[in-house]
Image 1 (tube, rainbow over the protein chains, first blue to last red):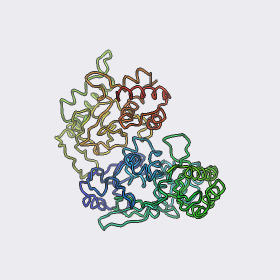
Image 2 (image 1 turned 90 degrees about the vertical axis):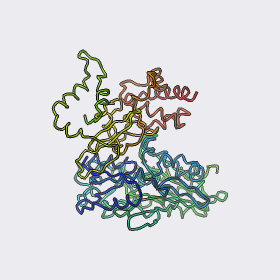
Image 3 (image 1 turned 60 degrees about the vertical axis):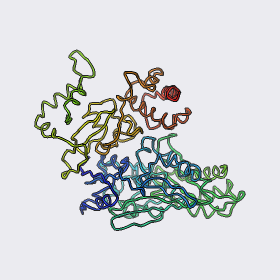
Image 4 (image 1 turned 30 degrees about the vertical axis):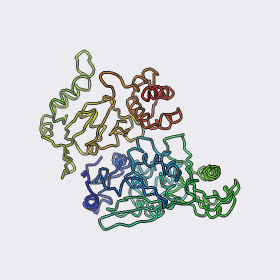
Length: 338
Length: 215
C-alpha cells in the first residue's frame, strides 16, 4: 500500500473542506472519503486505488448522515447507515423487502456491519483484470490501455451496457433495488448541495470507463430517499450465484409489483450481475403494465430486458440465466402475500 | 516494537510457548529484530497522546491508542497499518489470524464495540476510541467462553487456523439473533471460510453455545 495522509473529520463542513483539498493534477482522485473501507482498503492494498489522503467520515455525528426515517412519504436513509442496519430495519423489511433482501444477500455479515450504504453504491467492479495490476491493459484503471477482459476470461462480465473499451460488471445488489424504486441521491460538497435520481448516479463505460459516476471531486453522498408507492411491499430480490451465500451475483433481479387481481398496475424491474451499471429495464416494465402476469407475459418481459445483450465468449449463459431469473422473480413476486 | 508503555511491552512479550529454551519462536524473532534496529526504535518510541493527530508527511508514524481486551495500548504506527497487523505485530496478540488479508475469508474477525468486523480491512488508526475484543479476550477468569468450549466439544476444526475467526464470528452471530436455526447459522457464518470443511461441526458447536448463551 502506498503512503497516505489520514484525517478523521469531526464535522460536515470540515469533512467537505478536506475532501476538496490536496488537489493533484497527476492523480485523478487524490483525496478519498473513507467510511467502512471494505472496498477502499482492499483496493489500496492491491495498488488499484492510490489516494494520497483519506478523510475518515465514520465518526461524523451529523444527523443528516445517520439513521433511517420511514414515513408515509417514503424512506430517508443516511449514507453512514451500515448495510447490516438497513437490512434489518423493521420498516424496510416490511414495506420495502427488495431493499432489505438485496442487502442481506450481499457480502458477509462482517462486511455488512462495516460497510455503509453510501459506500456500497460506489463499490468498484470485481473484474479480475481491474483488480490485478499486473495486467497493464485496463481502461478503467489505466485509461487508453485497452481491455484485457474482452479477450480474456469473461464469464463474470457484463452482457448489457458494455463498450469496446470496458465490460466490467457493476457488482452491487442494493443499487438494483434502489434504481427499481426510483430512489434519489442527496449529495453535498463545499460548493453546495444537490439531489439527483439514483438512475443518474452511475455512468456506462463508453469511451471513459475510468469515470464511473457523476460525482465530482469533493462531493459526498449524504443520504438516499425512496418514495413510497403501492408497489414497494410486493417486492423482492432474487440472486443467482455460483454458491449459495457470500458470492457476487451471476444474475439477479429486483422486482416491485402492484397488482389489481392478476393485472399488473405497476411494475419495476432491475437486473444485476449482468450490466456495467445498475440496470433498470423500463422496456420490460412497459411490456407488462396493464397485462395479466403469467409465465408467458413474464417471459416476454424478460426477453425484452435482455434484447440488447452482447454476450462475450464465456458469458453467453448469462442471457438465458438472466431471463429465467427475471421470470422466476416476477412469478415469485406475484405469489407474495402482502 | 513501537509500544511506548514498557509495562505493556513486558507483559505482552512473555513467551507464550515454553519450548526447550523457554522462548517462543515469535518472541525470539521480535527480540532479534529489536536488537538490530536500536536507532529506529529510539526514534519511534517518543511520547504519544491519545488524540488522533494528522501527520504532515504520509511516511511519518502516527501516534494512536487502541483499547484491546480492556487494556490500552499506546502505539506509534505507520498509518497504513491495519488493525490486524497492529494486533499481531505490535501488540503481540497473534490469535487473530491473517488468511487472505483481503476481506474474503473471515480469519481475522474481531469485535469492535461488540460487533464483528474484519481486522484486515480496518485501519488501526480508525479503530481508536473503540472497544476491541480478540479471541484472547473471550475467556473470563480463566474459564473458556461457551463458544470456545462448544468448538472443543464438537471437534469443530481440523487445522485450527480459521478457528479464532470462526469463534469470534459465532459469538456475534448468536448475540445478533442470527443463530436461531441451522439455515440461519450457515447463512450468517458464511463469511468465515474453513478449508478443512468442518462446517457441520461448526454449526453443531454454534447451536450448543447458543443454547448455553441464551439460557
